[in-house]
Length: 328
Image 1: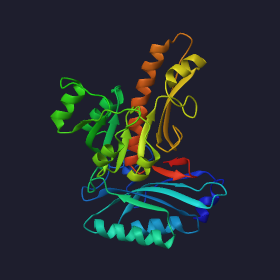
Image 2 (image 1 turned 60 degrees about the vertical axis):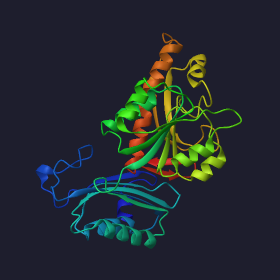
Image 3 (image 1 turned 45 degrees about the vertical axis):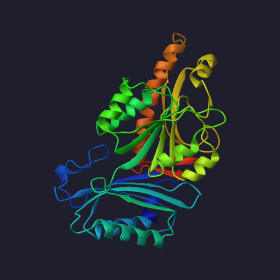
C-alpha cells in the first residue's frame, strides 16, 4: 500500500491491470473486455471496498483473491488527500469449484472486519440475481421507453418488477403493449397536491433493490425516503447544480447557455441536491430554439440515466463525503 501510494501524489487514483499468470499475447489492458481470454472454467467477480486508510489494504485484498486461485484483471484505488479513507474496486476471475460463492462472502467479510470497512460488497454477475427495480414515470416516456429497451436488449443488468405512474396510459400505447408482452405490471396511481399516493407506492416497491425515477414529476417526501430506506436514482433534465426545479430547459434557454446537460443523481430530501452519479453535456448555440433545446436534452437524459444505472449495478458508485460520489 505505501509503495503504491508513493508512486502518485496524494489524492490521485491508481489503476492496475492484473497481468500475472497470463500469456503476454492474451493479456487484457484497460478498456479491453475482461472476458476475451478467460478460461471457460473461470467466471467474473467484482468487489468494492471502502474503509479507513491504512498500510496493507491492497496487499490483503490481493491475497484474499489469489489465495483462492483467483486472478485480478483490473483494480482501481482512490485515497483522497488528507481524508484518511480508502476506496477500491477490483474485477477478478475465479473458479467457482475452488472458491464457492458462500466462501467468497465469508472471506471478504473477514477482510472487512480486519480493516473496519464501511462498505465491502462482492457480486458475481453470472451467479447473482439481477437487481430488482421499479421505475416511476409521469407523462413523458422517452426515458422509460429507453430503459425498457435497454433491459430487453440486455444492456441493463436489472429486473424491472413494475412501472408506476401518475399518468394514465391507454391500452394501445407502445409502453402498455410492451409491458403486457413482457409481463411487467403497470400501476396507475393518480396523485394530487394533498395525496401523493406514497403509501401505495411504498407497498409496490418493498421487494425492490432500488428505484429509478424516469422523469417522475412528483417530489417524494422525507418520510417516503426514510420508510423505503434504499437508493433512489433520478434523472434531472439539466446540468445540476444549475437550473434546479421545474422547466430547466426553458431556464437554460432563457439564460442563453452554450452547454446544456443532464444529471443523474441520488434522491435526497433537498430537491435536486442528492449526490451526483453521472452528467452529460451537449453544445448549443444562438441558432437553437426551445424545441431543439428540449430534443437535445431528452437524448442526453436517456444516455445519462442508462449509464448511471449500469454503473450502479456494476458497483462503480460509492458515497464520498456525504454529498459526493466516487465513480470508478
